[in-house]
View (cartoon, rainbow, N blue to C red):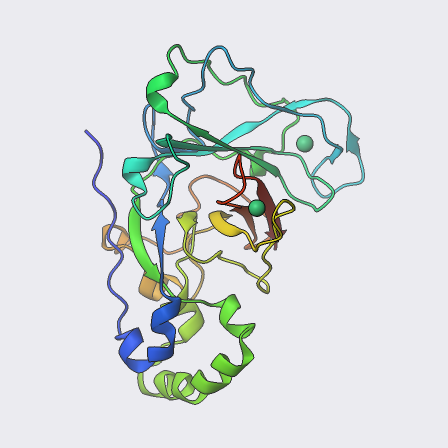
Length: 289
Ligand SMILES: [Zn+2]
Ligand SMILES: [Zn+2]
Protein backbone atom coordinates (compact mmCIF):
# COMPACT_ATOMS: atom_id res chain seq x y z
CA UNK A 1 0.00 0.00 0.00
CA UNK A 2 1.20 3.45 -0.86
CA UNK A 3 2.39 5.47 2.18
CA UNK A 4 0.36 8.58 2.92
CA UNK A 5 1.62 11.99 1.88
CA UNK A 6 3.64 13.96 4.38
CA UNK A 7 2.00 17.04 5.89
CA UNK A 8 3.73 20.39 5.96
CA UNK A 9 2.04 22.65 8.54
CA UNK A 10 0.24 25.68 7.10
CA UNK A 11 2.29 28.87 6.99
CA UNK A 12 2.24 30.28 10.54
CA UNK A 13 0.80 33.60 9.30
CA UNK A 14 -1.70 34.44 6.55
CA UNK A 15 0.79 35.47 3.87
CA UNK A 16 -1.75 36.86 1.41
CA UNK A 17 -3.54 38.94 4.06
CA UNK A 18 -0.28 40.52 5.16
CA UNK A 19 1.10 40.85 1.63
CA UNK A 20 -1.77 40.92 -0.89
CA UNK A 21 0.71 41.76 -3.66
CA UNK A 22 1.99 38.17 -3.42
CA UNK A 23 -1.38 36.53 -4.15
CA UNK A 24 -0.99 36.65 -7.96
CA UNK A 25 2.50 35.14 -7.58
CA UNK A 26 1.27 32.11 -5.63
CA UNK A 27 2.39 28.75 -7.08
CA UNK A 28 1.89 25.12 -6.19
CA UNK A 29 4.86 22.81 -5.77
CA UNK A 30 5.04 19.07 -5.05
CA UNK A 31 7.49 18.28 -2.26
CA UNK A 32 8.72 14.71 -2.71
CA UNK A 33 10.07 14.16 0.84
CA UNK A 34 12.44 11.28 -0.06
CA UNK A 35 13.09 8.90 2.83
CA UNK A 36 15.09 5.65 2.91
CA UNK A 37 13.02 2.92 1.37
CA UNK A 38 12.81 0.10 -1.11
CA UNK A 39 10.78 1.48 -4.03
CA UNK A 40 9.96 -0.72 -7.02
CA UNK A 41 9.89 0.40 -10.64
CA UNK A 42 6.13 0.82 -10.27
CA UNK A 43 6.52 3.40 -7.49
CA UNK A 44 7.39 7.08 -7.54
CA UNK A 45 10.86 7.40 -6.05
CA UNK A 46 14.09 9.33 -5.76
CA UNK A 47 17.11 7.28 -6.84
CA UNK A 48 14.91 4.20 -7.25
CA UNK A 49 14.43 1.80 -10.17
CA UNK A 50 12.84 3.29 -13.29
CA UNK A 51 10.06 1.77 -15.37
CA UNK A 52 12.22 1.72 -18.51
CA UNK A 53 11.17 -0.14 -21.66
CA UNK A 54 13.32 -3.15 -22.60
CA UNK A 55 13.42 -2.05 -26.24
CA UNK A 56 14.88 1.39 -25.47
CA UNK A 57 18.62 1.68 -24.82
CA UNK A 58 19.61 2.94 -21.39
CA UNK A 59 20.88 6.53 -21.78
CA UNK A 60 24.63 7.04 -21.75
CA UNK A 61 26.49 10.36 -21.43
CA UNK A 62 29.35 10.92 -23.85
CA UNK A 63 29.65 14.65 -23.27
CA UNK A 64 32.90 16.08 -21.92
CA UNK A 65 32.88 15.32 -18.22
CA UNK A 66 35.31 15.48 -15.36
CA UNK A 67 35.97 13.82 -12.02
CA UNK A 68 34.13 15.81 -9.38
CA UNK A 69 35.93 19.04 -8.39
CA UNK A 70 39.06 18.15 -10.32
CA UNK A 71 40.68 18.79 -13.69
CA UNK A 72 40.86 15.08 -14.50
CA UNK A 73 38.77 14.44 -17.55
CA UNK A 74 36.78 11.22 -17.43
CA UNK A 75 37.14 9.70 -20.88
CA UNK A 76 34.58 6.89 -20.85
CA UNK A 77 30.92 7.11 -21.76
CA UNK A 78 28.90 6.87 -18.56
CA UNK A 79 25.48 5.31 -17.94
CA UNK A 80 23.08 7.86 -16.49
CA UNK A 81 21.74 7.13 -13.01
CA UNK A 82 18.10 7.42 -11.87
CA UNK A 83 17.37 10.65 -10.03
CA UNK A 84 13.59 10.59 -9.78
CA UNK A 85 10.51 9.07 -11.30
CA UNK A 86 7.08 10.42 -10.44
CA UNK A 87 3.68 9.13 -11.53
CA UNK A 88 1.12 11.76 -12.41
CA UNK A 89 -1.20 10.65 -9.62
CA UNK A 90 1.50 11.69 -7.14
CA UNK A 91 2.02 15.13 -8.66
CA UNK A 92 -1.40 16.68 -9.28
CA UNK A 93 0.07 20.21 -9.39
CA UNK A 94 2.33 19.40 -12.36
CA UNK A 95 1.11 19.62 -16.02
CA UNK A 96 2.31 16.32 -17.48
CA UNK A 97 3.18 16.06 -21.14
CA UNK A 98 -0.04 15.05 -23.00
CA UNK A 99 -0.57 11.29 -23.17
CA UNK A 100 1.91 10.56 -20.40
CA UNK A 101 1.56 9.63 -16.74
CA UNK A 102 5.19 9.12 -15.77
CA UNK A 103 8.06 11.58 -15.47
CA UNK A 104 11.59 10.21 -15.30
CA UNK A 105 14.74 12.23 -14.61
CA UNK A 106 18.23 10.77 -14.81
CA UNK A 107 21.64 12.41 -14.82
CA UNK A 108 25.26 11.74 -15.62
CA UNK A 109 26.92 11.89 -12.20
CA UNK A 110 30.23 13.37 -13.33
CA UNK A 111 30.93 17.11 -13.52
CA UNK A 112 30.31 18.91 -16.79
CA UNK A 113 31.30 22.25 -18.21
CA UNK A 114 28.91 24.12 -15.95
CA UNK A 115 30.06 22.06 -12.93
CA UNK A 116 27.00 19.88 -12.45
CA UNK A 117 25.60 16.45 -13.06
CA UNK A 118 23.91 16.58 -16.46
CA UNK A 119 20.15 15.87 -16.28
CA UNK A 120 17.95 14.11 -18.81
CA UNK A 121 14.13 14.06 -18.82
CA UNK A 122 11.74 11.41 -20.18
CA UNK A 123 7.93 11.47 -20.22
CA UNK A 124 6.16 8.14 -20.62
CA UNK A 125 2.83 6.39 -20.80
CA UNK A 126 3.46 3.72 -18.17
CA UNK A 127 0.86 1.39 -19.70
CA UNK A 128 2.91 1.27 -22.92
CA UNK A 129 6.17 0.18 -21.33
CA UNK A 130 5.68 -3.62 -21.35
CA UNK A 131 8.81 -5.54 -20.45
CA UNK A 132 11.19 -3.43 -18.34
CA UNK A 133 14.93 -2.93 -18.65
CA UNK A 134 16.86 -3.07 -15.37
CA UNK A 135 19.22 -0.14 -14.79
CA UNK A 136 22.89 -0.89 -15.42
CA UNK A 137 25.05 -0.49 -12.32
CA UNK A 138 26.52 3.00 -11.91
CA UNK A 139 29.97 3.49 -13.42
CA UNK A 140 32.49 2.21 -10.81
CA UNK A 141 34.13 5.64 -10.76
CA UNK A 142 30.86 7.53 -10.40
CA UNK A 143 31.07 10.06 -7.57
CA UNK A 144 28.90 8.65 -4.80
CA UNK A 145 27.71 12.09 -3.75
CA UNK A 146 26.03 12.43 -7.15
CA UNK A 147 24.34 9.00 -7.14
CA UNK A 148 21.15 9.26 -5.06
CA UNK A 149 20.41 6.33 -2.78
CA UNK A 150 17.01 4.67 -3.36
CA UNK A 151 14.28 6.51 -1.50
CA UNK A 152 10.52 6.16 -1.25
CA UNK A 153 8.70 9.46 -1.61
CA UNK A 154 5.68 10.93 0.18
CA UNK A 155 4.58 13.61 -2.31
CA UNK A 156 2.70 16.62 -1.00
CA UNK A 157 1.33 19.75 -2.71
CA UNK A 158 2.29 23.00 -0.97
CA UNK A 159 1.82 26.70 -1.70
CA UNK A 160 4.83 28.84 -2.45
CA UNK A 161 5.65 32.53 -2.96
CA UNK A 162 8.75 33.89 -4.72
CA UNK A 163 12.05 34.06 -2.85
CA UNK A 164 15.07 34.73 -5.09
CA UNK A 165 12.62 35.86 -7.77
CA UNK A 166 11.16 38.50 -5.44
CA UNK A 167 14.57 40.13 -5.18
CA UNK A 168 14.63 40.54 -8.95
CA UNK A 169 11.38 42.51 -8.78
CA UNK A 170 12.80 45.63 -7.18
CA UNK A 171 9.57 47.67 -7.07
CA UNK A 172 7.63 44.88 -5.42
CA UNK A 173 10.40 44.11 -2.96
CA UNK A 174 10.65 47.78 -1.99
CA UNK A 175 6.87 47.94 -1.51
CA UNK A 176 6.98 44.94 0.86
CA UNK A 177 10.17 45.61 2.71
CA UNK A 178 8.81 47.62 5.66
CA UNK A 179 6.02 45.12 6.27
CA UNK A 180 8.49 42.20 6.04
CA UNK A 181 10.70 43.89 8.63
CA UNK A 182 7.68 44.52 10.86
CA UNK A 183 6.68 40.85 10.62
CA UNK A 184 10.14 39.83 11.74
CA UNK A 185 10.02 42.20 14.73
CA UNK A 186 6.55 40.97 15.71
CA UNK A 187 6.97 37.23 15.16
CA UNK A 188 10.62 36.37 14.49
CA UNK A 189 9.58 35.02 11.10
CA UNK A 190 11.79 35.70 8.11
CA UNK A 191 9.99 35.78 4.78
CA UNK A 192 12.58 33.96 2.66
CA UNK A 193 13.33 30.82 4.73
CA UNK A 194 10.01 30.57 6.58
CA UNK A 195 7.23 31.66 4.22
CA UNK A 196 8.31 31.66 0.57
CA UNK A 197 9.77 28.57 -1.10
CA UNK A 198 9.70 24.96 0.12
CA UNK A 199 13.14 23.41 0.62
CA UNK A 200 14.25 20.01 -0.64
CA UNK A 201 13.54 17.99 -3.78
CA UNK A 202 10.35 19.16 -5.48
CA UNK A 203 8.44 19.51 -8.73
CA UNK A 204 6.99 22.78 -9.97
CA UNK A 205 6.61 25.91 -7.86
CA UNK A 206 9.64 28.16 -7.63
CA UNK A 207 13.17 26.77 -8.01
CA UNK A 208 14.94 26.48 -4.65
CA UNK A 209 17.85 28.64 -5.82
CA UNK A 210 20.54 28.97 -3.18
CA UNK A 211 22.12 31.89 -5.04
CA UNK A 212 20.25 34.41 -7.17
CA UNK A 213 17.43 33.54 -9.54
CA UNK A 214 18.37 32.40 -13.03
CA UNK A 215 15.83 31.25 -15.64
CA UNK A 216 16.77 29.97 -19.09
CA UNK A 217 15.03 31.03 -22.29
CA UNK A 218 13.95 28.31 -24.71
CA UNK A 219 16.30 28.05 -27.68
CA UNK A 220 13.33 27.19 -29.89
CA UNK A 221 10.76 29.90 -29.12
CA UNK A 222 12.69 32.40 -27.00
CA UNK A 223 10.17 32.25 -24.13
CA UNK A 224 11.30 31.87 -20.53
CA UNK A 225 11.19 28.20 -19.58
CA UNK A 226 9.11 26.72 -16.74
CA UNK A 227 10.56 25.15 -13.59
CA UNK A 228 10.11 21.38 -13.63
CA UNK A 229 12.32 19.97 -10.86
CA UNK A 230 14.66 21.13 -8.11
CA UNK A 231 17.13 18.54 -6.82
CA UNK A 232 18.55 20.02 -3.62
CA UNK A 233 21.16 18.22 -1.56
CA UNK A 234 19.33 18.76 1.73
CA UNK A 235 15.78 19.32 2.89
CA UNK A 236 16.36 21.64 5.84
CA UNK A 237 18.88 24.16 7.05
CA UNK A 238 19.18 26.09 10.30
CA UNK A 239 16.09 28.15 9.46
CA UNK A 240 13.81 26.30 7.04
CA UNK A 241 13.07 23.42 9.44
CA UNK A 242 11.21 25.85 11.72
CA UNK A 243 8.25 26.11 9.34
CA UNK A 244 8.74 23.48 6.61
CA UNK A 245 9.31 20.34 8.75
CA UNK A 246 6.38 17.98 8.06
CA UNK A 247 4.48 16.85 11.14
CA UNK A 248 5.63 13.27 10.45
CA UNK A 249 9.22 14.41 11.09
CA UNK A 250 8.55 16.22 14.35
CA UNK A 251 11.04 15.28 17.03
CA UNK A 252 13.68 14.20 14.52
CA UNK A 253 16.91 16.11 14.27
CA UNK A 254 16.64 18.67 11.51
CA UNK A 255 19.33 18.13 8.95
CA UNK A 256 19.40 14.38 9.43
CA UNK A 257 17.13 14.12 6.40
CA UNK A 258 19.69 14.16 3.62
CA UNK A 259 18.56 10.64 2.88
CA UNK A 260 19.39 10.45 -0.84
CA UNK A 261 22.97 11.19 0.25
CA UNK A 262 23.55 13.89 -2.35
CA UNK A 263 26.22 16.55 -1.95
CA UNK A 264 25.99 19.30 -4.51
CA UNK A 265 28.56 21.71 -3.23
CA UNK A 266 27.33 22.78 0.18
CA UNK A 267 23.62 23.46 0.02
CA UNK A 268 23.53 23.54 -3.75
CA UNK A 269 20.96 22.36 -6.20
CA UNK A 270 20.34 21.26 -9.77
CA UNK A 271 17.32 22.92 -11.40
CA UNK A 272 15.61 21.43 -14.45
CA UNK A 273 13.52 23.67 -16.70
CA UNK A 274 11.36 22.90 -19.70
CA UNK A 275 9.44 24.64 -22.49
CA UNK A 276 5.84 23.45 -22.48
CA UNK A 277 4.94 24.96 -25.85
CA UNK A 278 7.71 23.67 -28.12
CA UNK A 279 7.39 20.13 -29.53
CA UNK A 280 9.21 17.51 -27.48
CA UNK A 281 9.35 19.78 -24.41
CA UNK A 282 12.98 20.90 -24.66
CA UNK A 283 14.77 21.14 -21.32
CA UNK A 284 17.58 23.16 -19.80
CA UNK A 285 19.28 23.05 -16.44
CA UNK A 286 21.14 25.24 -14.00
CA UNK A 287 23.35 24.52 -11.02
CA UNK A 288 24.29 26.62 -8.03
CA UNK A 289 26.04 25.99 -4.75
ZN1 LIG B 1 28.57 13.16 -18.45
ZN1 LIG C 1 10.02 26.79 -26.63
